[in-house]
Amino acid sequence: MTNDRVRGRVWVSARIQGRILGRIACYWAIYHAVLWNAIFVARYIAYRASLIAGDTEVRTIGQLYATFASDYAGLALCAVLLAPVFLYDVFRQSHRIAGPLVRFQTVLKRMIAGERVSTVKLRKDDLLTEFQDVFNEFIEYYNQKHGLAPNDARMNEREAAILEQVTQVRAAVLQEVESMAAEASSPGNRPWTKPQAGPATPRS
Image (cartoon, rainbow, N blue to C red):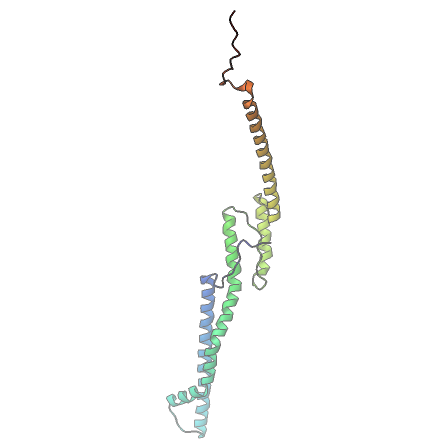
């Protein structure tokens, strides 16, 4: 199996990869925002319980939030520092999805145009390898139905046979041309050549 085009780019589809990356980044931000505020609510409930029990002094909501932010600043810092690493890994995973989809799309467009297509071989770390076998079966069916070679080996055999026939025809034509040229160059076949006069006969 051969690839019609080697996939070397990381950003193969802005529409697919961009949407996946944007959605995951949104989920990442929502998760940490909910986690941050959930922890603050838990701290506030604990503060109210301590206030009712008389174990703590009265503080405003701003003071409580400032204390909470200083205590959990490390959590926010870790979330910010890990975000690029997390998003980069998601980006690479999206390439393993978008790459095969773009590959299949390209082959389908060539099939619609009536071109011969080779079977598809995805990378070993792509996530759509299960679909590859079914897609290749369809390619073989398409090639057979349209009288096209299902692989490069059969196509090379056909091209070699056609080239041999062309060579034979060319040799026959050249032989015929040489034969006609030889006939035309013989003295008896030159109508435009004047006969040479013989030696003069002396008068008696």
